[in-house]
Image (cartoon, rainbow, N blue to C red):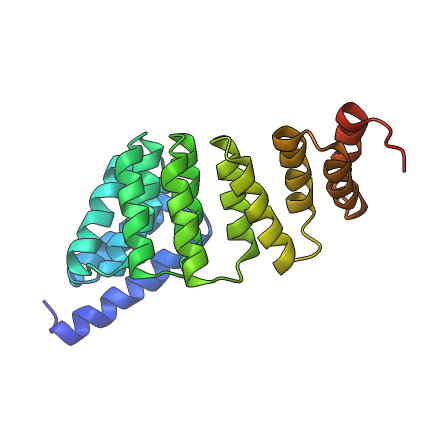
Length: 229
């Protein structure tokens, strides 16, 4: 048996080699090397996290969850492990647990875009639109200039038939990004549905088309018809 210093150095070598194998999608080889690293240095939280990723690459989501949980036990502030465990839980249709993990990852790292996207996708799968609106609101509070967050909150409000709220959010997105074609498109559609306002709806849809969202012209043709003036 080597000294702790020697073992840690050797563990790092296995860890680095495992990473290279993972990049080559040699997940089985990566698992072997991460396991060797862990045997030499059982406190290496990243090795557990990365071995979990390799297991997930082989669709062993149960084994991956076990590794992510070990990583979290060693480093309770390892946001990536929470995010990865959430993905594994979602793959096993454990959506409520996945939401909890993604939320924790965001608490630890409010700028963790992947976790935000994963949380939104999982809430959407469960049609938890109220929870999704709350998530986007938190993002907006942290970054009031996030046009995408306003846009996505607007879309979510549309699912709840809150078209007035949706129009407000699409308008905020447009204020922040005047070339946000999808925001013009959806604001125009919301105006048509909520107010039956063909002229205002057509103006937004036309702008969306001018910005490259060509489907807008089909919506104009179908729902707006010809407008005099």
